[in-house]
Length: 333
Ligand code: SAM
Image 1 (spheres, rainbow, N blue to C red):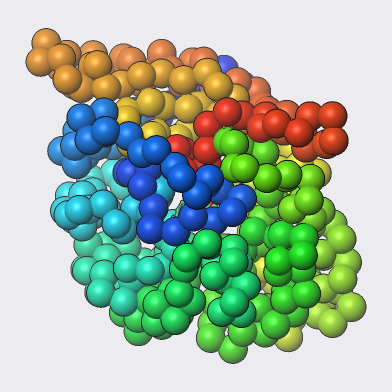
Image 2 (cartoon, rainbow, N blue to C red):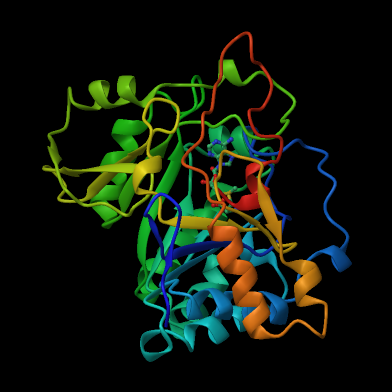
């Protein structure tokens, strides 16, 4: 197993894979209501995704997260989980995980555990049914809560991810932190990022987490930890619950120095940075019978050699357009 070091000395060990651009929800900060989704032929088959992931694992990727769109709405996606799960341990992979909106977990949680998944992230911005419906445009919170508890019952560790949205869930973080503590979940709060056209004004949604953190400190003891994932989250231990609380602050904190990840879209495009447009297209290689695994691996190396140092997202009144044109559902966040 070789390892990949980028031009800035960072070891790339984490691959995030968006397995579909489709989703059964339409979160207001993520998608427009009338999204046009990709034609099927443009989307990699599960076998193509598996082969490409295998090449990355051969190159030192130790952690794979499947995301989307909503990864669990892709037909037969469990076969991809099972195949990748077969590479855990001696196969070079150390962790297989998923980011989901939770709507399919009630019937899929046990299969995910069986495939080797042990931890999942579930996106849930609010515990209030009406606010949930408003934020997701048509979601039913009961389905998600049933899914979360099915995941817990199946033995999966759950982290709840909530995007901090001014006027939507602003008053709820105390309650969410208490709820997560009660049920044994970690919580991660995320600042909105200016990605993709969403019909609406992002400056109205943006809530700086520095403010949220100081408000939470009025009721909770947040203890510093050195827990790191190589990603943008800064974690604390909540003394009262013993659970972790993370803050993902792409807008107020630069997290690029320790970046260990790259992102693959469902069409086979590899983005070396969430906040930049440069990308490498693997689909033509996967569909060319003359391209063998060695050539695929050489293409991966060439892409990693182009990983940029970092990004600059901006949201302000003068730049009220996305910093990055693609939606989060393309790269899965
Ligand atoms: N459907 C899955 C889910 O809901 O977790 C996976 C894909 S979703 C794009 C991944 C995460 O990105 C979710 O937690 C979502 O809230 C977050 N997200 C989407 N658009 C965002 C934006 N513009 N800024 C910050 N987070 C965003």
